[in-house]
Image 1 (cartoon, rainbow, N blue to C red):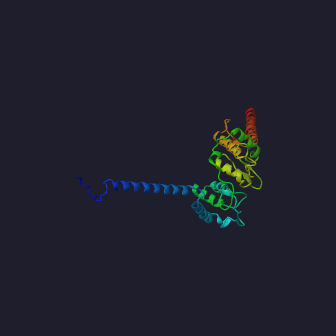
Image 2 (cartoon, rainbow, N blue to C red; image 1 turned 135 degrees about the horizontal axis):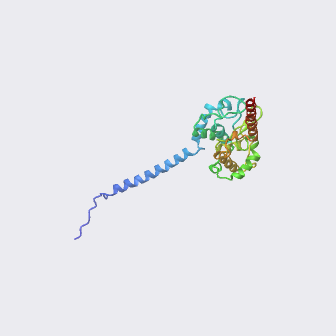
Image 3 (spheres, rainbow, N blue to C red; image 1 turned 90 degrees about the vertical axis):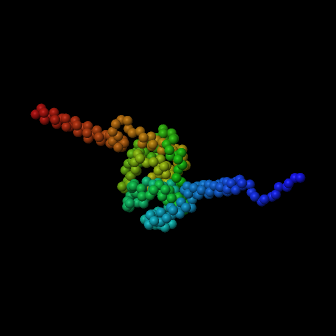
Length: 263
């Protein structure tokens, strides 16, 4: 006689463990997906949160001259359509906000963190299309320095000096020295034309040629003059003046000494 097993309604002892493990897997997966999405949103420079933070900074620090909506005022131009690159250059080099009115904005210590500069830049970029902040491969100095040197002599040396030492312009203006300027800011200056500088768009100088110019300037920055004292890298005028003052001065001094000795 076969006994039928009575159904007790009890679960297997490992069933609760399996359900708990399954719940943890689903919960962990959902949390990971949510965290990844949040991190990507926070890291996106064009996210709405970044733009809103930039708007707050703009209204607190820039609206006095440029207007609450960046439409411009009598003391500052409109920023609609200048792009992120223009803001990143002007604010990232300390030129803006301006310390005082003058022929051109002067460099000074930065008033914002890198994150705040980017927030300001992408807020202004959201108001209208314009040049964007360049990609890393265009500003890291990995181009052709020889081609960059030729392009720099043709397009830039008349103001900035062949060695990037800068020079005077008219009406109290000047071309700044490029001896410590970063590749990002050099590229941004070329595409936005700050102060008295002309705009070199991609039809004038291609992105690859801009990279070559930056490569040349980085070479000059990293390899100082092997011939000794540079005299400011201002060229033959400074060198000739040095010879006239100190060379001829030394000859005159020796002549006077010899004459006094003989008398």
